[in-house]
Amino acid sequence: MDPSELRCKECYKKARTHYTRDSVRACLARLEDIIIFALFERVKFPLNPPTYDLFDGFVRETEALQFQAYRYDNPEENPFFPENLPATPFPFPEFLQGSGASININKEIWEMYFRELLPKFVKCGDDGNYAQTAFVDLKLLQAISKMIHYGKFCGEVKFREGRSVYELYIRAKNRKALMRMSTIDSIENMVKGRVERKVMVFGREVSQEHDFKGEVSILYEKWLIPLTKKVETEYLLKRLD
Ligand SMILES: O=C(O)C(=O)C[C@]1(C(=O)O)C=C[C@@H](O)C=C1
Image 1 (spheres, rainbow, N blue to C red):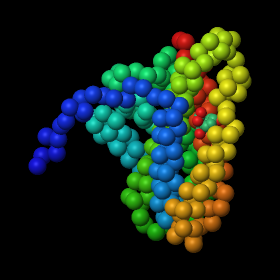
Image 2: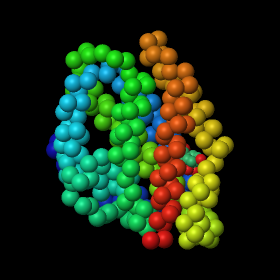
Image 3: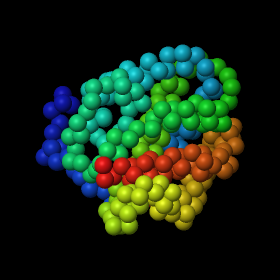
Image 4: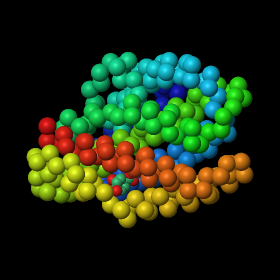
């Protein structure tokens, strides 16, 4: 059968119209699984430096292809090289509002990935598996990017629940207060605990070679959660533009 014939009524419904605190948190939890699995996949390979001679081009070409397959029509997805792609109007009914909808901090995520994450988790060496290394790097980068940019959706659901207070701080451009309002320590601790448990369960085999104890939750604490909150706060600051 030609897969392009696969159609059902639901396909035309473009259902991603509404997000709630619970649905956004459930997405973040699923992305956590993808990030942890991909991290385990990545540490099976050593650093493999020649991978990175062509990695930029590999990401640009992959994004150009995925653009044609409508990946970036979805406001949950943000390219690493937007300058390489035609501008996209958002065809999904828009949930995000204001000019913060187009925030893209992938350049910062890219820096964090190569400066902090890879050197921390991956051993030096070269086993020749460059294509596999590049695929898993991109998978991990895209999952991390999606998670961090979910900060926009976190910001929007919180704004809709507490519009009057948020409007006050947004008009006063009070970044600190918005950051404080976005921060829920109990949820962050729950996320870090859950990450630790997943690492222990998913990573039994990998952990014979790599001792991940605490490291993935530190990655969350030091980079992934702060960058998600940064996107959330920057989104809110532009919510009324
Ligand atoms: O769950 C939320 O409310 C979020 O904003 C997400 C998140 C996270 O990155 O997991 C970020 C900030 C909060 O302090 C708690 C959790």
